[in-house]
Image 1 (cartoon, rainbow, N blue to C red):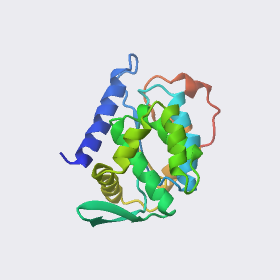
Image 2 (cartoon, rainbow, N blue to C red):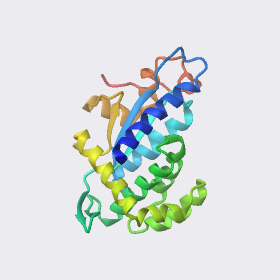
Image 3 (tube, helix red, strand yellow):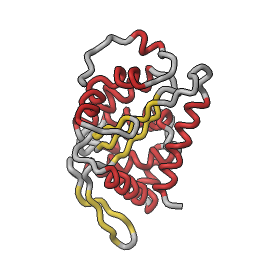
Image 4 (cartoon, helix red, strand yellow):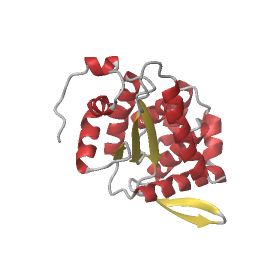
Amino acid sequence: MMLTTVFVAAVVVSAASAASVCSDCDGAEPVDIVTYYEAMCPFSRKFLTTQLYPTMKLLPDNVMNVTIVPYGFAHEKQENGKWVMYNCQHGPSECIGNAIAACVLNMTAYDAREYMPMINCMEVNTRHGHQMEALSKCAPATNMSESEILTCYNSTEGSELHHQMGQITHAGHIHYVPHININGQHSKLIQYNAYNHLLEVVCQAYKGPEPAACKARQHVAIVG
């Protein structure tokens, strides 16, 4: 089975699972958030660590359905039947970070509640050229296996996983990173509001009973 199919199926299962834990949401669908990003892009890192992950932690599982796609504007080619990354926008370190993230997503069955602690840790702690140091710190801190991640990263499977992230990214027709879709929609207005005030955006978009974090939030002006 193509890994892209597995990834898309996992997103659907994640949304269904989130809805199943909601006992009083009156059938409300979770707000679907898809983020295309690059591991070393400063704007991607800021969004993941100061907006996406903190918002996830504040809200119940049933309110948000999160998908991240690590690739951005990388380039790759096939050598001896294996996809090889040869150019990433922020240098070789970013290629490593993207590939590690692709392995982490696959290892957690694309469950955002499982992979986001690790992804957040990597984004907070990684310096250019020091991805492996961050991996050694973040894997045990988030109950993941460093050896399993490295096995994936160094394997044909790892290169294929990253290649599939590239296919998904190309299909998304992105022009910058992070590129944020809310409920399948993207515009400059959606991008601006989500990048700066994601909690407010999710609280406004969610149609179920208002979560405690939404009631307690400091209201900000949403453009539009």
